[in-house]
Length: 147
Image (cartoon, rainbow, N blue to C red; front, top):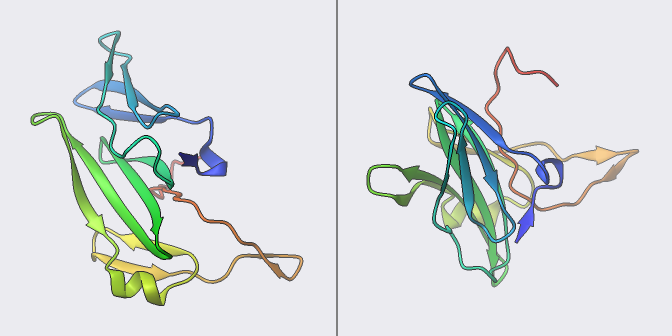
């Protein structure tokens, strides 16, 4: 499994119904949740097979944990967003980049949940040279975020 370089050692914190929960994605692909309010741990089932090639990242959205997965199968990129349903204890896919779009786009994309659209972002460069990397990187922009 590959992690986004910028989030290799990070976690995600959610606040929902007055409970603070920290989520960790361990190297085997299992999500560990640490409920700081109730002082207990729980383990979510693995989302993808252990020896698959993919990039994975986590993000908090409205108090829920989401997992963003980028996989490459026979040179066809697949970008998907998954949500864990605590009631059914299953991962549910809530967004997927259509194959036609993944074939068209060859750089950086942004998914807008509100409009259900995938948008190609401008090329990233440093000192006039294009930077090449492939990873899932998730964020929810907020005014209170510190950089």
